[in-house]
Each structure stands twice: as structure tokens, then as C-alpha cells.
Image 1 (spheres, rainbow, N blue to C red):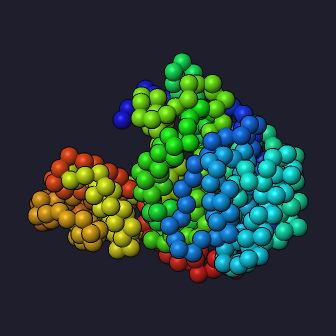
Image 2: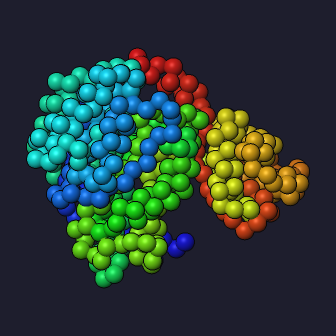
Amino acid sequence: MENATKWDLVPGGVTAPKGFQAAGVVAQVRKKGRRDLAVIYSQVPAVAAALYTQNQVKAAPVLVTQQHLAGQTAQAIVVNSGIANACTGEQGLADARQMALWAGEMLGIAPEHVVVASTGVMGVPLPMQKIEAGIRRAVRELSVTGGGAAAEAIMTTDTTPKEYAVKFMCGGREITIGGIAKGSGMIHPNLATMLAFITTDAAISPDALYDALRWAGDRSFNAVTVDGDTSTNDMVVCLANGLAGNEPITGQGSGFLLFRDALFEVCRELAKMIARDGEGASKFLEVRVKGAACEEDGRTIARAVAGSSLVKAALFGEDANWGRILSAAGNAGVPFDPDRVDIYLGDLQVAARGTALSFDEDRARSILEGREVIITLDLKQGGAEAMAWGCDLSFDYVRINAQYRT
């Protein structure tokens, strides 16, 4: 796909599309002196679609947001970092609903039109007085330049904020899609400890928005793995307020496909930022699977390789142990003939037809010493391709997670 011919990058993240404002403030939810509460607001009601964690244990804000978005409409998002409001019982549900109530009152909208999200330590109650003060301050500070502050406010162990936006022409109208995300650890397909909030000024039907988000999410956020753990709080929410003035996008026509591909571009780049920022990571990993029988098979195998602890440890140690790659592919639960598989590290082929090749170990180590490493498997089973993203498994990952609550 030749993305550059379809859309242009623009600054602003979630405030790049028309009619959106955002803010990120210091509410002192957990750590002093850092932004930890964000509000995103559309000046008009927006069509809404969302994806949620597949973990059976779902945090209070996920449950409340699922209820609020049953009507497929929202106008604001309120999110705090530092405390997840997960495993907090009835009080946690009441607190999540109260966050929506406060935001709704301050913005002059129905609380049911407020998305609620939290991320951080589980099993700890929210400091509601600080939350209320933070929401009030964030609403006062809402701005069309506030996307960056909002991206910073949703971070936990992230080392850098994550935002991305594109614009493109559709039916003679300029449409913009922007997003922010957080995620560094507890990351695995079916979402993970990640939040992503996407805004667009496109006019689009609820069903078309959900279909586009589901398609893009499967190939981006659900193709990222850091450590094999899926969290209780994950969600991806997309709001479309229609202020671009385009003919409403429905069905599977050319307008839908153009929108879907642009949404995928935003989701994919945010997902790759998450993989690059994996807890303790020193290397970014892209796994490419070629020659799969179907795209889903390719995605499953790519995710299995990217998520293998043995592959990730070998990547950290810069060890060209390609047998671990083939073994991880075989553990994916997808039928293929291992005697037909070729494996590459970068552009260096290290295995052919499932067996070893004589290759230059020094060149292989040089490839693995890079900050970004590409592993390619050619299954020779069909014509489908897929990708997944991850990172290495370092000593620092253990240190960060051994001391997460302290």
C-alpha cells in the first residue's frame, strides 16, 4: 500500500480534526508534578465505536464505557493515569460513573455521552477529590492545541507520549484522523495495557465506523506484543463528529475503503510506537510473514514469533538463534509445512526449507545489534502476508515490573 499518495501527516494528535479540543493536567492521582488526567471533547455529539480488552477481569471504567457507548454516541472522554480503578468492586463502578457525571456537568452534556478510562495500579481506590479537581481544571484548559498534553497525561511507564494524525481528501472534502495512545508493558494481542483514543471529523455511519475500527485494530493494536500479558483496562475508542462535511460514509464503497486505510495508518503507527516503547526494551522487532494460506494464519504466526520469550531473549542477546523463530511459529496452532519455510534476519537468509544455511555469524550479529530488527518467515503455503510488532526482553523489564507498585 503506497500510503504517501493518499494522505499527509499533520500535527496535533486528537485535536487535529475539526471541532475537537483536549487538555492534560496534573491532578496528583499518584505522582506529584506530572500530568495524569486528560479530557478530550467534541463541540458536537459524535458517532462512537470502541474495542475492549478480552480479559475476563474488566476494570470499572471499561464496564461503564461499554454501557455508555451502547447508543453509539459520545461527546467527551475523561481518563486518568496512575490508578487503574480495577478490582475495586461496587465502589469502583460508582467512582467511574461519578467521573462521567462530573465531566458531563462541567461540559454541559449527558454523562452517558462521556467515555471513562483509567490506567495504572490495580486494586487501589481512586482519590476522588483529586479526580474532581483535575476534571474541573482540564475542562477549563480545553484547547485545540491540547492534544500533546493529553497524550502525556495518559502515560504510566511509557517513556514518551504517542500521537499521530493524517489528513486526506474524500468526496471533495478534507478529512482528518488523529490519535493518542499509551502502552509500554502488559501488552499482548487482544489489546493489552494500552489505551488509544482516536478522533475524526469524518461523517460516517456507526456500523461503518465500527467495521473500520475493528479491521484496523486487528492489524495494528492486536498485532503488538511486549510481554504476553493482557490487561483489565484496555480500550480503543474512536469518535467521529462529522464536521468535515463529507457525504456520510457507509457500506464498503471507495470512501469507506479510503477512510479505513487512513484509520489503519493512524492505528498502526500508534501501535508501533507502543512496541518501540516496550518496558525495558532496547530493540524494536517487526515480524513479517509471507506466503501464508490466509491473512489470519499469517497474523497468528507473526504474533506468536513476536511474543515468544525465547525469541525476545535471543534478540536482546543478539544471538541468531533462528530455531527459536521456527519453533515459535510451530506453536501458533496454525498448520503449515515446516520443511518449506525460509527465514531471514533483515536481508540475511539463515534457514531454507526448514533447515540451517551456512551464514555469516558476524553479519547476523551486526543486523541484530541494530535498534530495529526485521524477522521474515516465508511459509510458501499461499499468497497472504501479515505483520506483528514487539521488542526484546531485557533485564530492565524484570526490574521495572518487580518494582511497579513501589
